[in-house]
Length: 306
Image (tube, rainbow, N blue to C red; front, side, top):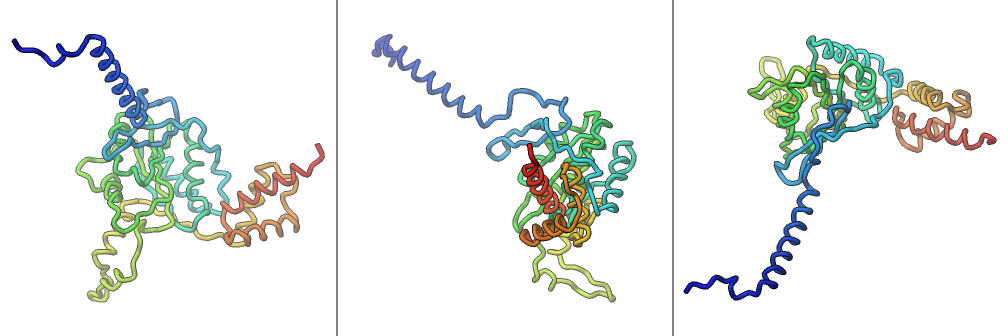
């Protein structure tokens, strides 16, 4: 007679082992669920999202709704009129279904690159413009993101902030393919707007310049430089941002002081305080001006009698 292993185990012990096994399984599932995307579908009622990647390589990602985006307007952009005009025109063309380009905003830090993208979104969100923030480390998921958007009726800007790549990073290849280089055409309702402190997004090394050759009076870059230029070259519109002069910095300070309801907006004392603030920070930028205005407006309000 063949006896099964369970025949030698009392029924009560079998029930105990089964209960223990189920408890361990439930605990394991609970730990796994913490690394999985939410069960709910994308909240398309929102106007802005962040792309979130699941755990592990190739893990599932999802669009996380942003219900409180920055309340910035194009009027908040000072001393970058030419750049604002160009990207505003490009965005209006995009919303109209006309020809429009992916945009690379590069240059000095704190000069309004990111603010300009956020302000455009707020200006045109009621016209159907939507914004999706994608981190550099998640660019490999671009094909998945584009697949979710291509059948939607809205117009999407994929926003990559402070974009740059170090030597050896491979995620820039996914960006190159999404911009112009894949066998599949990018969706008509998606553009990529990226900001960076580097015009060519990749580090430029001195030894690579030695690969350049002079042929018939023309300079031909080496392969290393060509590879780096080819990435930024895929953006159809380049907008450069220069460091602010002292006068431009003070103009931005006065704008934000008015915007934040400061009691004193101009005058020798305010100007002196603004310049000292910039000197301590080592930067005359729009970001520094905004930070000064927040501090100054707060101090003035605190000193006022209640």
